[in-house]
Amino acid sequence: MRHSHFTPNSSIYLGPHGEPPLSRAGFAALSVVMALFTGPAIVLNATVIIVSLMHKQLRQPLNYALVNMAVADLGTAMTGGVLSVVNNAQGYFSLGRTGCVMEGFAVSLFGITSLCTVALIAVERMFVICKPLGHMTFRKQHACGGIALSWLWSLTWNVPPLLGWGRYELEGVGTSCAPDWHSRDPRHVSYILVYFGVCFALPFAIILMSYTKLMWTLHQGSKLEGGAVAKAELSVASMVVVMVLSFLISWMPYAGLSLLVVYNPHVAMDPLVATVPVYLAKSSTVYNPIIYIYCNKQFRKYAVPFLLCGKEPWLEEEASEAATMVEMATSKVSPA
Image 1 (cartoon, rainbow, N blue to C red):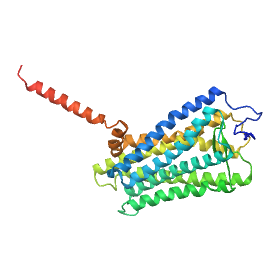
Image 2: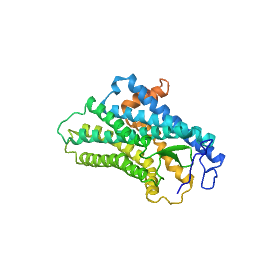
Image 3: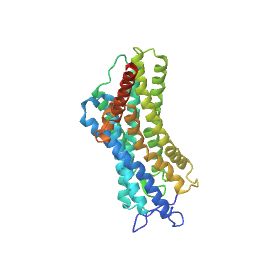
Image 4: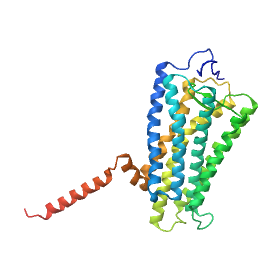
């Protein structure tokens, strides 16, 4: 079992014999790694939010959900990411017990909201493409309702530790906080099991069922009206599938490790090994904006010039190619 605690005069996480879990160089390396993920995550997610506010063309129902995910990922980066960089640079958790509870609550709230938003996008794509309720249009009010539900669901299940059912504690090498997966108190164990079921397993099941139905429909092509529609829908579906896979790759190790500790609390585990899934999960905040800026032509059209201060490299390439073709054509028809 993990033997961690806050010392009376500081927030230093100690091992079973009172030793620090990492050397100063180790903490510094973790700080640098988190900075490499956190900086781009803040810039890219903020870009998605800003360009969506600037351009009405991006205010489509599906894009509402993408922006909501950017807000949640930005929140995770600004709380869990930035604090991890600072605390690892210092070599200990510097915000005390209250700071630990606040960080654990904030990161969990934003993280679960992000996962619920992935489930919302999966359901939206399934309804649009598979049409289980006929030709129902996914409208703005549907998107706003789903977004509100994602925040309400996350808030509902992350507040109980503030009220005594479950708790937020230091994890890994002791520079970040999360729900306490290690406690043997029946109250906390029951919370963790319910939390895992409703905040991870349930959204994952919704995503899996929605995309199984969606991909089967796309494969059959029976409910699509023509090749152009099929191609467009497949493009959007492929983008979201990549988002789902990246999210699961980021979070599955953390979820698996947490369940392992719940069912086998006496498992021997080096703090650094326990920290890797934590930081892998937090790194997910940078993947989503990269995916939908790259895969979504609408976002790419506005986000790339915003990031490059007005430059549009693909237009310059197209102009250069066009000029080259004109020059070649001219040279062919000119007299020898």
